[in-house]
Length: 298
Image (cartoon, rainbow, N blue to C red; front, top):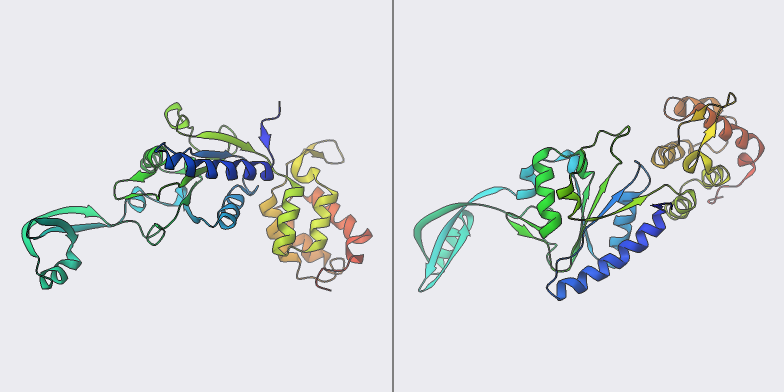
């Protein structure tokens, strides 16, 4: 059984999970977190962001590899206890004078607390999608925080709005990726779906955002570059291509109206990042087909 799903299949599952989480929250049940595992550059992050926009939800992305635990807690602040009659509460130091002018008095008690992180401020009015991107690349303290956030949708100074969904992404462990192994305690806090690259799914997205139509045609004619295995003239297996890297390359060379006349520049741009054998496939197609195709904007 093939356990790896296409991006469109993963997106469909996420759509249902998000709808179900809203229903679970209304029943007082804990929403379900989903972990998307897959190679780099296959649109794990993109499909989550796209889904959030389509469903009208707040989308919050936290790159776990780039933060410290303080970024999840919020900034420290001093709170003072204020009273008016029998009504007492804690406020930040910046508001003390305003409340005194309104007839409240300070009791003299104070405590350390934390402000809500800025990435959540203003997003309390409706459910959110909180994406913990590359969570297995995080430092240990952030990994520990991610466990609680995944399980409880809250951390120290904040809680996600009711009906929110936490989604995590990770690369496979035990290969070329510098990721930490997820322990069983973490893995019990979410359900994992494995995702693979799809040229057809990428082409749908690429056409929407305006990737050079000649380049879309190239990958559609050579999907094995991304999805399968290809070999060089000696029968040696060539490393599988990366959609993110190819897209960056396509966006760069789309500047050239005539790719054939500028082939040396095209080759120089790509030869240290992409397999030369795949670039030669592109060259062959340029000479035979692609330079004869009009651009969509023509």
